[in-house]
Amino acid sequence: MSGNPDDDRLEELRQRKKEQLKQQQQGGDAEREAQQQQAQQAEQQKQAMLKQNLTDGARKRLNTIRMSKPEFAEQAEQQVLALAQSGRVQGRIDEDQMKEILRELKPDSQSFNINRR
Image (cartoon, rainbow, N blue to C red; front, top):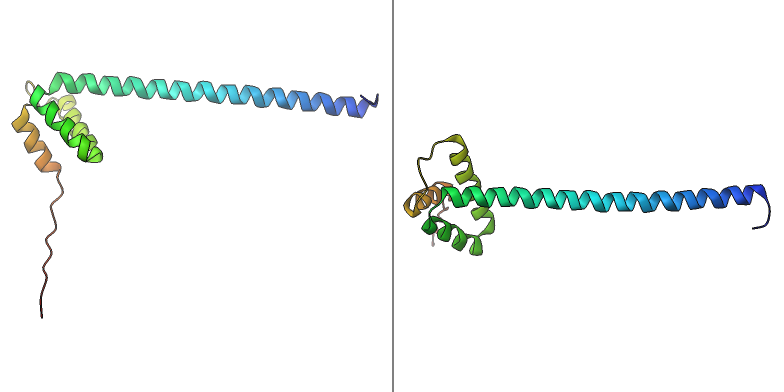
């Protein structure tokens, strides 16, 4: 450089800052990967529990609902998992029981009255 100690010191500080930023970025990538891996494991556990607690017909019905209403299907899955974890389900949930669970979760439809004058 110019031989000035202040310039050398400034350049050294810039290099350190660049290295710190690289390390932070790499650390953030590793953290994101860990979060993704953790989410994937949780999803696998959830699917395993659903497979264990639902019959084929009930799983098929849930998958059909997932195609049209993903949020509602997620809500139904959470309900099934809660029932299974609390021990309120004996055996596996069949299609008729799944229909009943879905009916309970379905919000009441609002009716509209139209008055003509």
